[in-house]
Length: 479
Image 1 (spheres, rainbow, N blue to C red):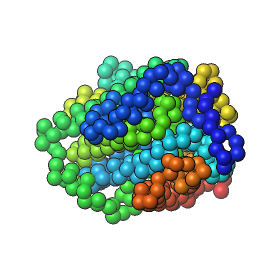
Image 2 (cartoon, helix red, strand yellow; image 1 turned 180 degrees about the horizontal axis):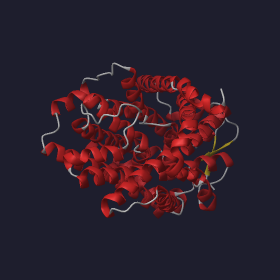
Image 3 (cartoon, rainbow, N blue to C red; image 1 turned 135 degrees about the vertical axis):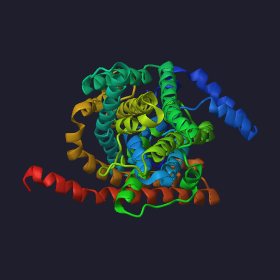
Image 4 (cartoon, rainbow, N blue to C red; image 1 turned 90 degrees about the vertical axis):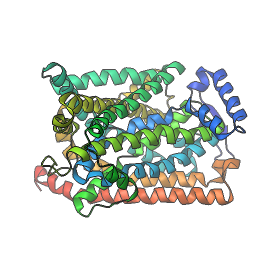
C-alpha cells in the first residue's frame, strides 16, 4: 500500500506517493535522496551533470506529445506558411511547461496524489472532471495514433518490399508491441527504467530521422537559413483564417489535458520527493522541451524547403499526412530518405504516444476506482484505450463524429484543471511550509496565470469549430 499523510485541514487521510520504486528499491531511492541533498551546495554545472543521468518523466511527456497531432500540424505549417511558424510550437510548449513546473513543485513538496489533492482541497467536481476528461481525450485521440501509425507502416513495407498489406496488420502489430512495453512499466523497478529508456530511444530516434532529411536538404542548398532564424524571433502571425487555424493547431498540439494528468504520477512512480524539485525542472527542459522543439522544427523546415510555394501545398484540410510529405520529398532527397526515413520517424512517434496513452489510462482508472497501479489491475486499466486500434481502419468515420466535440470539451476542461492546480499552489493547508513566499510567490502566480490565459485562448479556438462540426453532422442525423 502507498504511504499516507495526515493533513489537519483535510481531516482525513490522503494517499501519498505510488507503490513503485519506493516499494521495489527503497535503498537505492534513499541513496539518491542523500546524493541530491549533498549536491544542493555544489556548482550548477555539477548539479546539471548529475540530473542529466536521471532524466525520465520529461522524456515521457515529450514522447506523448510527439504524436499524430504534432506531426500533422508541423508538416502542414511548413507546407502552407513556410518558416513563419517555427516559433509557435516552442512557445506552446513553454506555456505548458510553466504549469507542469508548478505541478511538479507542489507534487514533489507534498507527495500527495493530485487526484486526491484536487478532490479534498479544491472540489470533487474539478477532480472528477479532470480525470474523466483526461480519460476521454486519451481514448478518442488514441484512434488517430493508430490511423497514422498504420498508414506510415504500410508505406514502409511498400518501400522496403514492394508488397501491399492491410492497414489493420500494422495496427495489431502496434497494439501487441505497445501493450508489452506498457505492461513492463508496472512489473517492477527494472520495468520502469526499461520503459523510460525505450521512450528516450524513440524520442531521439524521431529527432534523428527528421534531422537526416534536413541535413540532406541543407547539403543541397535548399534551406533559407535567414528565414529559419526569422521564423523563431519575428513571431509572424498568419493573416487569414486558414493560417490562424494552423497556428492554433500548432500551439494546441504541445500540451494536452491527459499529459497534465500523467506528469505528476510519473514523478511519484519514480519515488521522487522535495529533493528532486530542481532535477524535475531540468528534466522538463532537457527531456520535454528540447526534443519536442527540435523535432517539430525539423519537420517544419523540411516541408518549408520543399513543399511551400509549390503546387503540392494541400488546398483543404488542417493537416498534411506524413506519407504524402514523404512522397513529395522523394524526388528531392531520394525515395529511401523521403519516404522511409520520414515514415520511420512518424512510426516511432505514434508508437511512443500509444504507449503513453495506455499508461495514463492505467493511472486514471486506478485512481478513480481506488486501485493501486500495479499487477493485474494495472494491466486491465491500461487496455481501456486499446479500442483505438480500430482507428487503423475506421478513423475517418469516427473522426467526423467525435474529434471536434472531444477537442472542445477537453479544451474547456484544461483551464478548469489549471485553476485547480493554481488554487492548490496557493493553499497553505495543502502546501504547508513548502508554499513559496514574497516575490517568488508573485512570480509563480504571474507565470501560472499566463499559462491559464493561453489555455482559455485555445479553448475558445476549439469552440469555434463546433458550428462547422454540427453543420457537417446535421444532414447525417436528418436535421
